[in-house]
Length: 378
Image 1 (tube, rainbow, N blue to C red):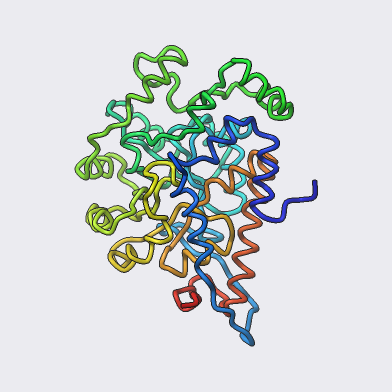
Image 2: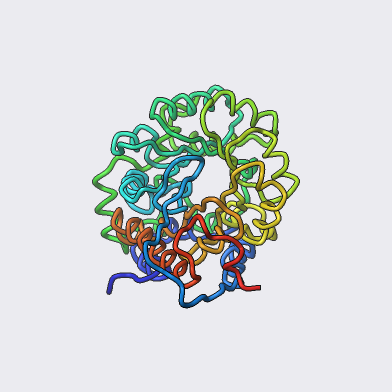
């Protein structure tokens, strides 16, 4: 097919190339998927002001996120099982992000390990942490992230218990995949994916295998993971993690003004307004609908980022206009990865950059730092 021109076309190509269970994992939400859909549709409802006869030359998208320079206010979000969209997926995505000048965030539940990603990158990446009951293992993960010279820790707050995603249950999702007739058929119809997977040994949770206690095989690994998320996680634990890490800390999963105020008091460097991509509390409000309220409440106290629903550069511009200092893309880069590997991640970033740049110009602005609510049409 012709080169994809937008994220929707990358998604369609990924759907044809990635086995159904893994494509569905990336493309699903909890229960009715109402919040997942709202993340996208609420962006569409925000309209922009078209401005004319202004100087559109010498435009710049460069800015900073938590004081670190970025070529545009976009980071690759932490996503689990990225290496099941394409072989060595986290390593390829990290390389693409580094070359593009934007942060890559490695998930605790990645297929490639912290050390794998560090081995193929030259600049620091970010690491996302789930707090688990086994605090020794949490400390081990933090120490490994420090050893890899990760430049920020992203602490996820909204996964104390796992939301139910019907597609994953029906697909019998696992990493590595099970070998039932259904799964064998799904893989057999994706020969290029299979060929790439045969070239790598990275097919399970790289950050956990060999490090989790009393885990010797995939069955015990899956049980350990399901039991380890800590439902008693509290603000006191955030303070402990901050002290243990000692570097830039970002809190992910804030969707309520009161929680934002609590987060601002922790001394963290930034919060991410996020509903976990609609994968946790179905029926929650979209990230973008809550962003202005949270910005008004704590925007003068802590840096605010946004995650969820971004499918274009226009969405990035709208989030920045409503007060976000940075944004994260998860599904868009996963679609690119599944569709075309590392080149697909680069293409997803190029698509978003071009859309952001042109939209900014047509709104009468030349520098991303000048974007504010003035570009939003009432």
